[in-house]
Amino acid sequence: MSQRPDLRQGDDGWCVQELQSRLNKNGYPVRQTHYFGPTTAGYVKQFQTKNRLPATGVVNSATWLKLLGGNAQETPAYTSNSQYYENRGPNHTNRVILSFDDCPRSHAAFKSTVDAAAALKMTVVLAPTGQCQAGRAFNAAYARSKGQIVIGHSMTHPNLRTLSDAQLLTQIDPASKAAGYMRPPYGSWDARVTRVMASQGVRIWAWTRDTGDWAGASQAQIVSYLSSTTRPGDTILAHMSWNAFNPSALSQIKDGLGKRGIGLCQAYVGKTAPAKLPNNLPC
Image 1 (cartoon, rainbow, N blue to C red):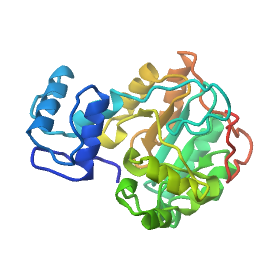
Image 2 (image 1 turned 90 degrees about the vertical axis):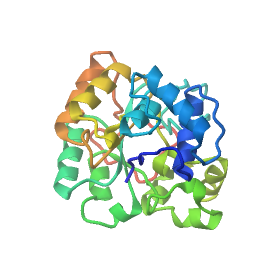
Image 3 (image 1 turned 135 degrees about the vertical axis):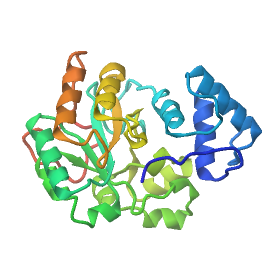
């Protein structure tokens, strides 16, 4: 489950740290204490007021959406093919990559969307958890046969920063090991996580733009947001169990970006995508 919980004064834990990190990225210099105290509450209210949200101090889905979607990572230009940015992954081009985390609602939903991506001549990134990979709703071999990329999303979707080095190693799921890339749950990783994963030949591949589908955004809202805000080279985060993972959404997103002259990745159109990904995707 990728949805962030509602937070309020008195809460503590890793999700409060994530909140404080996001506030910092939005220009509010709160200390990352893991505790939701009055100072954090004050900054939350300032952020809510600035973004025309009710200044309750409670971080609900609407506030999370603004914190995440309203401050997308800048999409840096590569200066060389050897330079690696964890938010962009191995995409060195100006084409946009759609990516979908977690697990589809059913095998039928999975198959229809993968088939649609192939028919639309786009390559998307699918990042199922290890638990999903072991189930019936997802089929990595089928996705790759349709030209779609499969990376991992950990075995059980924990916050990687809270785990010991030994525990991190147990979270390297089959798709991460095969592809050489892992999508960190909750977008939570640090230099230690990067180092431990790299010791096993796995790189972090996060995202530059969050659709906010996990907060309940409708298909129309997602399409409108992406059509108006996406930058060339973005890696877009969505989820297989929410409102962008279906054939019509893919078609509408492609059309919306096309009107602005932005293309989607076409790395393996008409081909079988490799399990092991290259350092430079041919998008």
